[in-house]
Image (cartoon, rainbow, N blue to C red; front, side, top):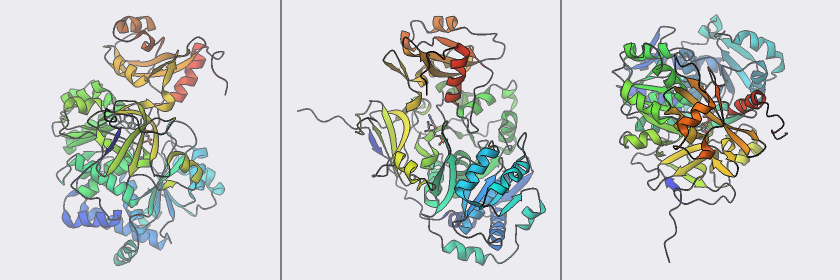
Length: 546
Ligand code: AMP
């Protein structure tokens, strides 16, 4: 009898234990270790703090929250683009045990009202405005409809300054001592790219450890300076950025309130950053700046690309042109704090650019057949599941929704399709919902997108399935072209792909665009693309009616 196939299951080993601290205690520990190291740089506001200055501000703000009557478990919302105030509030709420509710800076009144009510936010801190978002005005519009909301503080107002209380810090320490690392400390609304937002509820233990181990795998020490252009309202900014830095003593550098490729590279050059973060589209924007080579980014050693499929070509370019030789890819989702797998600096370049790495320390991964729930053999595609310290407590006050994704054995079912190879490296092939079935053949858009990146005229590509009477679905590619390229037809793409891709994987339609519809965290809204394509191609008759 032959031995059973090796299952697509892996557990991440480490000779380093998990942290048992709360976020506040962990911060105090770092400050005691590197009081004079630089903690935070906010370039737009010209603010700089050493760790001891940062802690003094955090403690003063924590005292202000206590004076306002904020107690453990209260929900405190933050609605602002990236700024020092965001970070200070993140740590001050953690110190008093208030649950920070991250509000997406792109929200408008309808979504704002929904999250304020769903989470029962008592205190909302917000920027006055940013670009087209008039936060203060929008809050006034919905305020009456938010029963729990008692106080609103705008960050450039005297009320914000008054919230920093120069008082007896032992009051903060006393409250801190009453907190458990397993308490909920953060709610992050996530809807992926579809559906109504659900509040992933995360504990100190969840996010502190995730930030810490991301930092460990990037090799962070107090000598590192991390450029964080990704939004704080998402785990990428506040966990992989802020918490990775505060748990290792590295510096958090905020290049700008919102993403700007020039300001990002300027920050790297002037602040001598050693690490640069971004979703793939951010790196693409930076690499395609006409003056990209004029920035001195020689200080870069590492960085993280994550959030959506990271094209091999783009990974290669950040290594070659930005010198990010140790760059890593992380894969994860808000519900898992977020990172579940990560490439290691000593993985081969090929593995580092073409997979999302291996299971993080102390976590488990498995790939299952979504129909049967059984673990598939290595090399077979299926749904990726994650288990361990990083899995959220649940969706805030939505036990039914929680039960849809978290099973009895506490595996988080990600909804992502993945393949695990013999050595435990994971490849994400797409969202289950994005898989295209053309004439009975499963087509993974990711594969076609990777192929299209090799076309010299194509800057970025996204592939979707559109309805088709004959095949059920047909492939359509939306492409962004390089500067100076006039156009690209489906015929030209077909010629380029002929002989290189199986016929059923060659896009039937090609649509040239300037931009893709995106979420603030850099995820392409494929649902929106599909709807627009149906209209564009006049396929309403073939589209299934909802
Ligand atoms: P969010 O909860 O907003 O962070 O979205 C999580 C989703 O982003 C995951 O379920 C994946 O579909 C996608 N994602 C995140 N990182 C990666 C990655 N490195 N490669 C492919 N997809 C990713």
